[in-house]
Length: 251
Length: 77
Image (tube, rainbow over all chains, first blue to last red; front, top):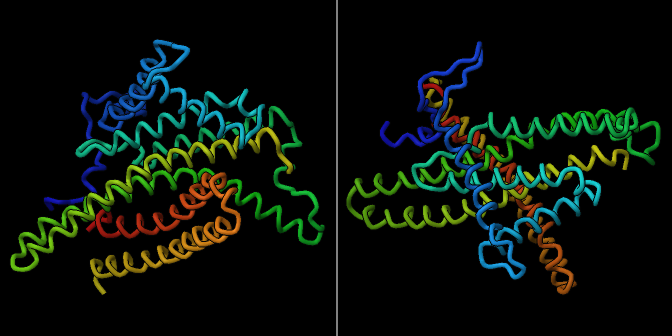
């Protein structure tokens, strides 16, 4: 199939096979674009902050606004202690996801966040951090997270079960939300774009009608830029909310 | 029923889930407008919450769209 929309997510090795024991560490197009995401995010911040002017120029303003934006987000969700402990982590996650989403928006480029293994690794990293920090900081008081106060005893056992299930389904929904948005968005673009040649080839009045999917493609492309930012924001925001539970369990 | 038609029917059924997300997004924006018209000065402060709720709700519709697209294009023939 010439216009197979799923083809854009195929992983192709671009280096000779590299194996460490059972681990396949071959450098693929996914690795290449992840490296590009890290390079763009850290390179932009380093380059924009280079003048360190008291009155910032344009690039430095953008860097400072980004910093302030994430800083405010962490402070609102996790308090000042959250800023002290987790701000660098959340900022890194936000910048990486945002850069990876934006790089994926270029035609014919690869979207790293459209691979569920990448979003799942990040979500599991957050989940493990919450568990480790939660138990290290609070000891067994961390388990109060599952026991909300002010609930009558005859319904408490049921609430505890629900809280435990919701806690363990967090990394799942965290990973799938970002992956599904990028994946479905890119597929949708490709599917609707493929309507244009299909209608144009059909002949007759449909040739004129092929303008409609063309405009739709442009509109969805614009929406995808919004989604690229929004999902990076939501991913970082949920990271803050989950990390807050590690610092302040039992609310 | 052969496999190919079962796949297409499954993709159609998966799309029903998007209706739920549509209802949810409508409730979010409708209630935001209601609140915003009652107290316009406080409304811009809640814009972040609005977008957050929208994105979280919208994602559920995207889940079912992803399932439908996987059934259409990524499932084995």
